[in-house]
Length: 443
Image (cartoon, rainbow, N blue to C red; front, top):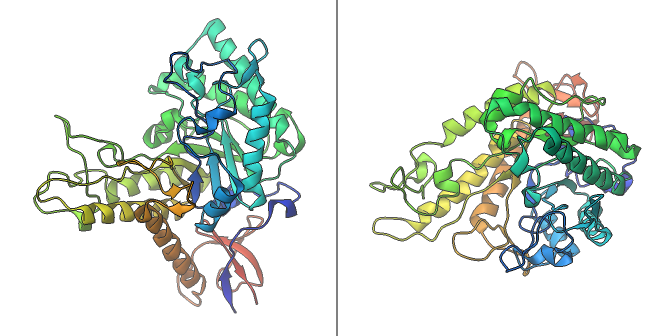
């Protein structure tokens, strides 16, 4: 019996239906990459900046926060790096509304978004398309009541009706995510969030076509993993279609390592992450948020969502790479920490059915969170990219070894493509899923 990993790069044009479950789709999306600071951007620093419910953003918004327009060649390069899905954070209300009275989306902007989506779909990549921060039209009013709440719902219905209709004929490779990071910090605010997310699900389903069975992603409160586990595990929106919802969290963790840019009175930056990468005597070694802490969070997400057929989308993760200075500090150990973190994050997620999407800003400045230099079609930060490749390589090797188990060995759970569990010790030729990974038995 010869076993080989299926690369899962099947052309979307060869797919006719949307029969795959959320779990099956998620298994084909790993790992993912963010087209960050691009389609969600707008000029905000001039004397007359773009505002919400205007059409002042235009096509130039795409390069307002980074300087490279998205091309087919860029997406080809992303695919060549081993990514299987692209998350496209997108603005709609923020500078792309041609009629504020009806919330009509600028047709030129819609056409450009479709063009970028098509680059990905044509490459056989999955796409997650969302309504990002979008000028804060909902984020700044998430707790609204009365007339203000009804306006929020009218806007949400209008924009998602237009987006869904524009893409209704696309197959399962296109995934919709209703929001981005809804700032819900108290359990008492959850009722509003679920109401908005229920509306998103209902509106998309009502447009028909392939949207009737498309995978939809709803966001946890503040996309915080702990809050999502505590407040949303038994509080998901309902969906007339079974097995087609996923929940999204963002895993920027720990803050001192991923985003802190200067020491503070309450704590220091973490230059070094992972016990093997600590520098003796440094005040910048991680003191919390390392492997054990991250594993606890991921295991909880798996137990409360993934194991119930609700995949988790880790829509954004990443770490700022720093140029290290100071007596006794080590650039090499920081570089090793970056590589190890990206490896650990991807392996941790993919082993548990959580789809990791690396955030990528396309900024070539110091202290950036950039993997790919889009202008040069090259790797800007090899430590990040190597870490992702390390995870992929280890998972592929582990998948093959586990699948070869036989006799009394403890084999992992193996499922057919239709979701039915089978005996992993006696597989017939076909395509199977195990541990969130797809593989093929040739003969």
